[in-house]
Length: 256
Image (cartoon, rainbow, N blue to C red):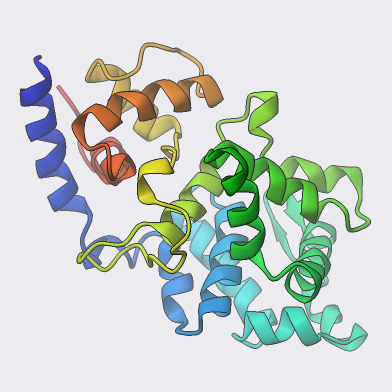
């Protein structure tokens, strides 16, 4: 299949899946429940970190997190008391438990009080070399300055160690991309969409390989770089919009 044909297919799939109808069954619906920038950021970040497995289960667990924070995540994170933290006790989603959540709530409080918040930290590290990899690595570094159990580190992706960082790349897509379709938020203005990296998972990876867009067999950071570079040929300004085409096709269709 030549590139022009492939681009045409991908563009049609983007139009099919990058729609408001995509929101309700997807984890992005959780931050869509808020209007304040900081609420959207924190709800999106925490939701993204538990976004593996079946999407209905993810939505149920993320909703439970937000309810425990009185559906005001920014106010909760920046102003919680010891009694407030008791509401988080017993939270479990797969390998993510209440000790991980408590650490992240404390780390986010420190990040917003001392470092200016998620956008400020990610942008500062991105600006060093213009690489999303640096933004992800830097955010992880800053969050881990807060005392934590070693078990919690696995929930923060480390692309420098080879991780595909699917969940944090998805979060960054939510925060950075802006179009007229209404799914992504486009709240962060200092990181350009052209710099984003594909949120690679089993569904998007399998579809990309069937289409000849990805040769690497492992879903790791090298595969993310390979696939994103190929997608930039089709749209250098907004390569990650094709996440909708690859993921949507992988979830809802059987590609011949």
